[in-house]
Length: 396
Image (cartoon, rainbow, N blue to C red; front, side, top):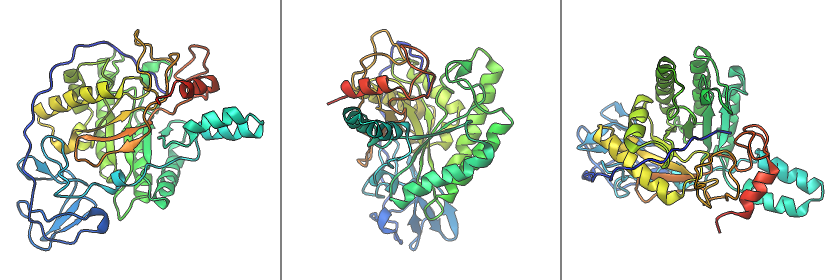
């Protein structure tokens, strides 16, 4: 659905980051999903309650991201200054320990049904290697503001009913994709109202008042320059405000951070700060692109180091990587629009080891075109030939 520009850049060496001491000694009720060893921080007393990343002490509620001691912050997993979560302090968030949501309503699933109905058994079997894998659901300006809340709520409630983690992509920023293949988006006046409806939908599907969704916010936005500084500044402000509002629901928000072959980590970190990374869980790399996972991890670590140097705390430096089409890596020439002979990448999974990498995700939906190139239809449309090629060259 999105186009991605790539540029080869030299990457700086990652700087070393200190590891903060874990908080210990908190005595209180911890729900089974958050079972944890005792922890203590300034101002916390016996009887404090930890629930879904919220601490209540002496009647004071401290929400996600509140600093408890030197470099240590409270989130749905205790995070230290190097991005590790400190499993000994607080167990991993349920959104990381439960399965990712398998959305039954994708174009790939519809294509499988159509192929079976037409007796194309072999095609259906191959396409099912896409449809049976958890993928993100994209929400954008193709849904009216008035209908957005119910659509978001329906999606996250379906995931909650299965005790699975939903992944949403929000894609409606004004001037989207700088007017190129994925042009569109709401107006500057409408966009904030749309974000509010998304937030309400997330809250409608929350668990004990806190959303457990993963939200990837606005691919084709922060990393693009539209040759209009004033418009870019307004875009950054809209994303920053959206990040703050969405994070207030409890959802983990990830801002797009390009890919390893595009911008320098220093430039990326600067853009993320302008977009409100201080309110987000972190950032997402390789969206709709083809970079090898190892390269994206190295890039993400350098971006995180730059953010740390700029004073962004560890609880806001986590990241996810799109592996939907990186099984064969990028084209040598950097082609991003439906490049040939690419393959499905590693299946989505979450990580609970305590590092900054939260998950590998299929953010771009395999089989959906990048745009009208290489014989494909318009951006976001189903392209069976491309889908079958991704299956053929998939990572084994």
